Amino acid sequence: MEIKLEYNPPAPGMVPPRLRRPFKDEDYVPPQQENHFDVVNELVRLSVKLLANLPDPSLGPDERLERIARVVPTSQLQSAHRRSARNKLVQLRRRLDELVPDEGMTSEEKLDLLIARVHELVPGDAPFIVKLETMGDFRATDIGLSPHHWQ
Image 1 (cartoon, helix red, strand yellow):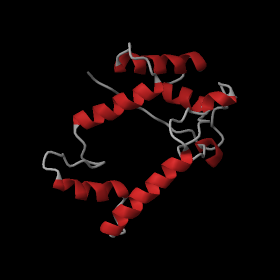
Image 2 (cartoon, rainbow, N blue to C red):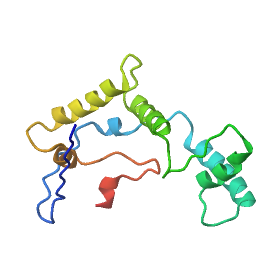
Image 3 (cartoon, rainbow, N blue to C red):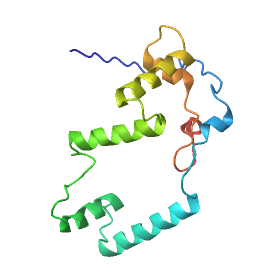
């Protein structure tokens, strides 16, 4: 199997015209299971406790927790740069389950569905990356800002 990737980012003045939002405004707001205030409070409490015990400013909360996790002999060291294929697959499956919550579909079928949706929204023979860029990204991030507003 050979995969060739070619990506030519648009130069200034050559950016394809973006579509208007392809969905209604309310479609861009993800349903949240937990109250934002509760999430922020718990994150602050855990981060402060981790920082108090491991005050090295070069470490983030995940790295601090990994250092503490060595007290569990059966745990595996997890790092963003050295994840196993199993951990990567678990994360991909989890994200696909969030995006397409249909328990009757496999992960590959869910990915195929998302790809087909892009082709429906932006028909034509343009390369896939160009179709995505044409759509734009109007979603909010998990901190409430949209990458569209950064441009």
